[in-house]
Image (cartoon, rainbow over all chains, first blue to last red; front, side, top):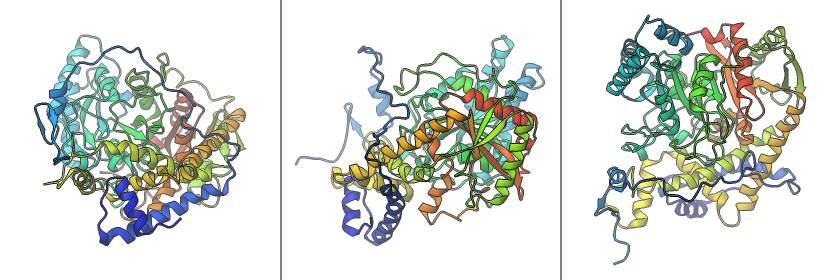
Length: 95
Length: 482
C-alpha cells in the first residue's frame, strides 16, 4: 500500500509528530516501502487462526488491591520541564 | 586481566590477586583511553563505581561475597539508574536522570556488581547497527570501520574491547544476539517473562527481554542467576522458583537432539558462514549430539509480522514522551498541540518517527484488522512452527546473522534492508523463546556467531550446550587488538 502526502500528514497528526514539507515525499516513500514488505502477510490464509497477543497466551496477573507505594510527587517532579505548586505547567488550553 | 571472564575474575578476587577497587580503576583507565574512539559508553560513573568497589571489597573481606561481587559491569542506557542519566540513545531523554533503578540494575547491585557506566545504543533500541543513536555510532572493536550490531551495540563493544567484564543488553528482535555475533560474544535472550522489564524503557512490551552479554556461556549463566526471577512490579514476569543456571553447565551432551531449520540453510546465507556452522555442527556431533532437519515454514513472515507488532506497541509506549512530565521540551510552544508535536519531532530521530508512524497507521481505524490482527495471527503460526519442531528435537541451531559485521553507513539508507538483517532472530521474540548467540568462527578477521534456540524456559540447556562447545573450541577466547 503506497501512502501519499495526505496520508502521511494524517498519520503524523495522530502520532503528534510534525513532518517538514520538504521531507514528506521521502517519508511517504520509505513508509510505503515498509508497508510493501509487511504486505507479504496478506498472501497467507489465516481465517482459521486466532490472534496471539502474548507468547504464552497468559492473562494479566493481579495483585491485592492494597496501597504499597508512598507519595513521592516532589521527588518525581524534579525532572519535569515546568511545575508550580505540584502541578505540571503547559500552555494555556482554555482562554 | 581486563580480558578475563567473569568466572576467572571472581577467582582472582577470591584469591586476593586483585581487589575490586584495583580492577575497577583498571577498567576506568582503559575506558578513558579507548572509549573516545569506540563511543561504547555514553555515561561513565567513575566515582560511584569506586565507592561500590570499596563496598565490594569489604563485603568480600567479611566473607559474604557472591560470584559477581566486585565484578565491573556496564548497563545498556535503556535501564533506569537512579540519579544517573538514562537517555536511551535519544535526544528526547538527553536530560532524563532516572528517579529509580530498574529491577535488573537493582539485582546486579545487590549481587555486588560494580556499575562502570551506561552504554550507547540505537535510539529506543530501534536499530540493528547502533547508527540511530543520538550520541553517534559505536565502532566495532574488531574493525573500527564496522558496526558493532544493534541495538545493544555499546554493551557488546564494551565487553569485546575489555571496557567492562560483562554487560546488560535487551533484545526485542535480536538486539542482544546480533551484536554478540558481530563482536564475538555470548549473548542470551531469555524466555519472555524470565527477567523483569521493570525500569527498562519500553519499546515493544510483548517482545522486550533483558539478558547478558558476556565473554563466555558460563559468565552468562552467572549473570542470569542474578537477574532472573519474578518481580511484583512487572505483571508479565513469570513466577518461578530460583533456578541455578550454572548447575547444568557440565552435563554431557550425549543424547542431545538438535534441529537444523531447512529455511535457514539456503543460498541466502553466506557460504562462508555455512561452512563455519558445519564445522560447529561436527564439533557438537563429536560431543554426542545428533542432528536432524526441521522446518520453520513461516519464518519468512517473521519480519513482516514483527514490523507491525513492534511499531504498534512502540507507538503506544512512546506516546508517554510528550514534553510535559520529563524529557525534552520545545522552546516557546504556541499551544498544547504544538508543545506535543514539536517536543516529539525535534527530539526523536528519523527511525523512531518512522516506526511510530508505521505503528500508528497499523492501529488506526480501518487498518487494525488487516495489519495488527493479521500480524498477531501470523505470530501464532510462527509459534506453532517452533512447537512442532520441538516435538522432535531439544533445540535448534542456525545462524545468528546472515554475515559478519557490516560497514558503518552501508545499510543505513534503506530501512527495509536493515530490517531483514534480523531474519534469523526475530521469530524467536515473536514466539517468546530463549535464544543465544555464541562465537562459532572467524571470517576475514571478524567473528561469526551461531544461534541456539530452545523451548520456553530451556535457558539452562542452551547454556549447557554453549559451555560444552566453548570447553572444546576457542572462538570465544579470541580478543580484538584495540
